Length: 276
Length: 322
Image 1 (tube, chains in turn orange, purple):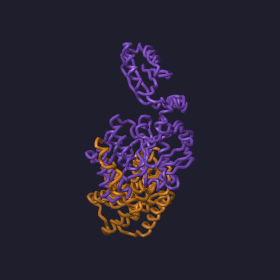
Image 2: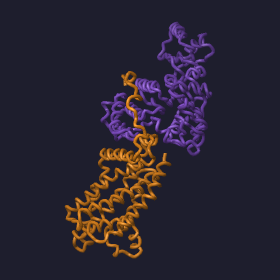
Image 3: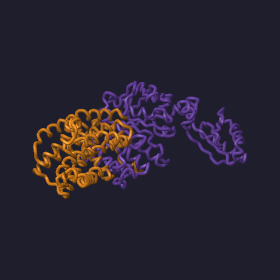
């Protein structure tokens, strides 16, 4: 600081490219820059990855070895084959809870004032945060399938179908994350985000075909399970990993993905803009 | 380019039942420093947030660099830099990462953003700390990083919200040097402060806010003429001699009719026209054998400015508001 007055002034030298200089895909690029910010923040507190690393492993172990014997007709291996694709859909929806929590506390920080004072699209900080989630969801899929493989899970289809299954699960989670972002913008503190999202995710994930066949449930519950987006996702993932018809569940899953985006992206954005 | 960098008329803003701004005008000429002086809760930060497009005014209009802050917000954002009262940096990122991120959001290429960051870190003496997370910075370093972040895009209008609050005197002077060099480069600076001394040292014009209203707008010279020049504050070493001191000061003709003010903390303050009177005061103190703990010549404090302008102390004013 002592040399400050004698150093060349900060406002000379390099000319900025200026917002008009690189107009193509500006907002997409900005979102990538902020996704990188979120990823750096994750590396500062790796605990943020528990829900996509340890949690799926614990769920697999618990469900397979506690319920597997009873539910799989005596064969834990048979239940593992049935459960894993379902659990992938369930845990990936559950792991979208954290983005709302993080955004809720993040937005209170001064750096969001800076984002608001920059000539960037309003949606960029939100989209950037959701982009960063991609890596968390990918990690979850890799761990789930990898650990399942160690436990004896085998896909009955092809590696390409496995990739498709992972892709569709991540797509679903990225759109479902907007529900969490919206809740994160609406409620007062991070704890409340978790409370609200749990109320939503729990019935959706258990009231589905994740753990047991729909045909074992009472009729009224079947009606709910059959429209539940997580059921469609699970059917699609299960079909892609184990074989069977997949066109219909994939179609429904993408319909839900589009629906969630169309409804909750604008809601989240509006809630963010109003929250100052 | 218009002559005026900032031009606000009738800005009003309320938060629920609380009126933050009750219709203020604010004008800053290009290439000058304009200081908004006022106590906490006067509406200074609200005004800055409206001008920096973070907040919408309920009434009134404002143009920054000729662009309307409400209808052309993005145009305004292209040419402003904002340094908030609470450092707007990302604590989990290093100094370098913070500045590179802002550069890339301003459409610099990764290389240019990095070059600009290196340049600014060096200018603000943060090169050694560039790889450290901002949360490990001291208050002064954080403030500098914040200011650096607001300069990445070479803004022509810079908003500084209480840039020196909480900084020690040496750091404050450093910050003043920064402000001066920004202006010498042609930028316009709007800063808020609670110190007349700071406004006097930096500003070409001063607007005084009180309860969301402008109560004075003048040059530092003009404002000082209104509120009176320097103050002489003396504290007798022996509190029992307080009245003797008052007698001595009252007996000095050069002080005219200015009555010594008692601050209730053992000091007496009297308005003086210049420092010519000091030798006389010292001589009389010595003749009376009156030892002093404090003997200082200073500009009126914000409290004294407000007392002169409004007839109430800032504390009283805050109580009325509460």
